[in-house]
Image (cartoon, rainbow, N blue to C red; front, side):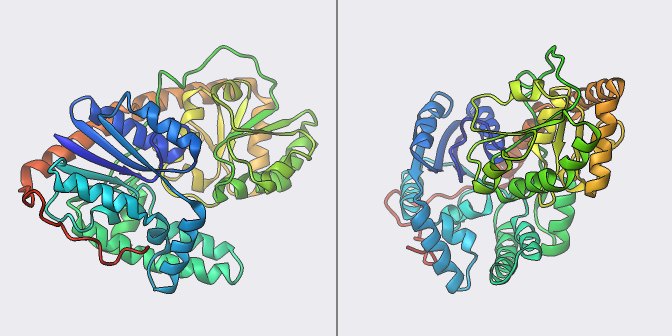
Length: 414
C-alpha cells in the first residue's frame, strides 16, 4: 500500500515526544508499505535529518518552515476567527506537494500526525484518512490560558475554543482518529461527542533505553526535555525555585541537571543557581540519565503520555513526577514511580529516595519491569496495523482521474 505520512516535524532523530512517535510509525509502516513522508523542517539541521530518514522511508519531502511567516499566518488566522494552530502550519508548498501526489494516484491512504497538518488532506475525502491527534491540543491551550495574563490569556482561551471545534470537525470527517491515552479519549468524547476515535499508546525503545551499571551520587537529579517548550520551562523553573532549595536544605550536595536542546533565557538563567547544570543539546541523553540517581518530572501543564517518564523508567531510574506528568501512564504510584502534587510533597519524595538506596533500587527495577510489560513498541504498532487494515477494508477508495483537480483548500491562508 502507498501511504502518505504527514508530520509537523521531520520524524528523525527520535529525540523529542512527537518525533519519537512519528519515527516509530514511519519505520514500522515502511517495512511493509511504500511510505512517502511530507513534513516541515524547522531549520537547516532538520533538512539534514530528512536526508537521513530517506534510508527508512521510500520518499521524504521536507519543506522548510519559516517561523516569521508562520507567525504571520497564525496572526491572520486569529483575526479571521480560525485556529491559529492551523494558520501556523498552513504552508502553501505543502498543499501543492500533497495535491500533486494525489493527482498522480501515488497515494492509497493518508496518515496525519497532529491537527495542524490535517488541512493538507481535508479536501481529499476520496482517500482513507487517519489522524493522530497526539495531545488534545485545545485543552492544552485552555490550561495555558488559565496560567497566562491578559492579553495572552484571551488569545489562548480563544484558541482553545476554536481548536476544539476544529478537532471535532476533523474527528467526524476522517475515517479514524487516535489520541495517546484513555483519559484523553474520555476528554475528547466528553467535549467533542462520539466519533471513530481510539487511543494508541506510546512505546519506548527498550533496547536503546535500558539499565546500565553505574553508581551515581545519591543526590544527583535529572530532567530531560526540549527546553524551549513552555510546559518544560514552567516545570523546571518551578522545581528550581520552589522544590530544589528544600532538597538542598536536606542534602546540601544535591545536584540537578537539566538536559535538553534549545534552553531559552529563563532556563539558562537557572544555571546560576547552586547545584544546577543546564547542558543544552546533547547527542545522547542516556549518559545523563545513567549518571543520575533520581529522575524528576515536575510538569504542571501537559497532555498525553510523557516519553521522558517512560525513558527514565526504562533506564531503571526511580521517578518522582507530578500527577499531570503521570496521567495516561499505566503504572501504580508507590510501586513503579512516586507522585507528588505540591512543592513540599515533591521535595519530600525526592529526599526519601536520596536517603534510601534500597528504595531507589526497588523502584527502578519495578519501573523497568513495568515498561517491559506495557510499553514495548510492538503493542501499539500492532494496533496501528489493525486500524489500517480495517479502514482500507471497509472504505471504498475512489481516485479522481489523472489530471482532474481534487479541489484546492479554499480556506487556506497565504
